Amino acid sequence: MGARQIYETLRDQIMARVYGTDGLLPSSRALADELGVSRSTVTVAYEQLAAEGFIEIRHGARPRVASAVVDRGRNRATSRPSTRNARLSKFGGRLREGPPGWTEPPRALVANFRYGDLAPSDFPLLAWKKAMVAAMTRKVDRLAYADPCGSLRLRSALQGYLWRSRSVRCDVDQIVVVNGSQQGLDICARLILDAGDRFVMEDPGYLMARYTFAATGAVAVPIPVDADGLDTERLATVEARLAYVTPSHQYPLGGVLPIGRRHQLLAWARKCDAYVIEDDYDSEYRYDTKPVPPLHALEDSDNVVYLGTVSKTLSPTLRIGYLVVPPGLRSMFAAAKQIMDRHTPLAEQDALASMLESGTYDSHVKRVRRRNAERQQALLDALGRRFGDRVRIDGTAAGLHIVAWFDDLPQEREEALIRMAWSKGVGVYPVSSLFDRLRTGRRPQPATVGLVMGYAALEPALIERGCKLLAQAVDELAVRRE
Image (tube, rainbow, N blue to C red; front, side, top):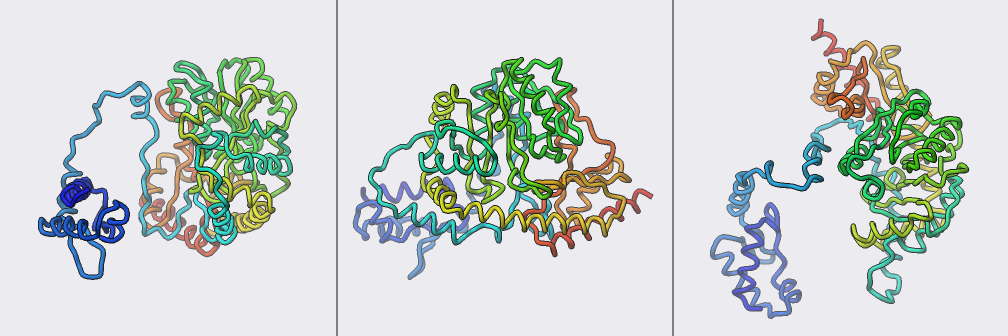
């Protein structure tokens, strides 16, 4: 490769904003080693780029993309034509009406009660680093694609963990390691649902599961939940191919499905020849008693697909989840996983297996369970001090969030309250968005304002501060209304 070719390649990459805002290019020595050319060849290419104003060169520093080029690229990016009307598949078209894009919250928030975030201080950094270093330095016998269902070591470790912690008995071959629970839901949707099929959803329920199943063209059948979770009596007249449930801690209202309803749900699934997707997303966090055994632990659960994740115990950034599938479906889940992405990254699998085998993971879960119980209590105390009997709380028995109902605020004030709270630096999120919106074309709303309040990322002092500011927002909203 000559200097001209290197120059043209780098020029095109710079114009395509590969190096980002004020991006640093490799040093001439590093790039020469990478390309297998002499350093002088790279130097000639860099000098030409500098002469044309693409990069800035300073002695002793790596070349940097010139600011003028960055600004020009930014303007070009904002003037690109919209692809809103581009021709897409039916799947792509359905996604236009699906989940909104990722929105980063304002950085000036004092307290963000967003559910799903975890405290960085809870992450077992030293233990994970040790496990990852061991995984990366272990003798490599071969570099090749691996079992799409996950490493045998991790699946064996998960088999033992699920039995001792959740009473789930399964063979190693029934476990499929996935890139987070969301991929697990996607695989289930693709294998079980066709366009026009019906699927049962808790109402209110987990939006990303609903979007995933609906993206196949299947139609949601919302079933209301009450204080005990899914109202299984209403399944009597329902025909569907799949039911998605969170029986150990209903999301978002927090009910625990009683044993009678569990058997009713499984009987319905057998009658309809349907599958039950059991999302056990935060079962490790039970504060009043031991975790409730899952559906999968009951008899006649052959049509249950059990879904677990480490996103709530270690970190959502790791993207490691697992499915326990009926034996007859194992080969199909393996094929679907292989088509999607071959397999989940092996080093992370190996590190997690090491922590499970050594007992480090179990100890970590016990520690963060205590911390999150303290955070939940801090939130309940703060809400009680600030609002008294003006607030009603659901979902305190387990999990990493509660639902706070403000019965003196009618639901139509919800958006105004959220805007007011965010203006004061408090991130709060409505429960109304989790109610069904597919049945009638509009979303049934609860009568009063309800907020889903996560607490796992906040320490007690910030929880107290956030509740104080939220109370100010509520009071100001009441004054404006008067």
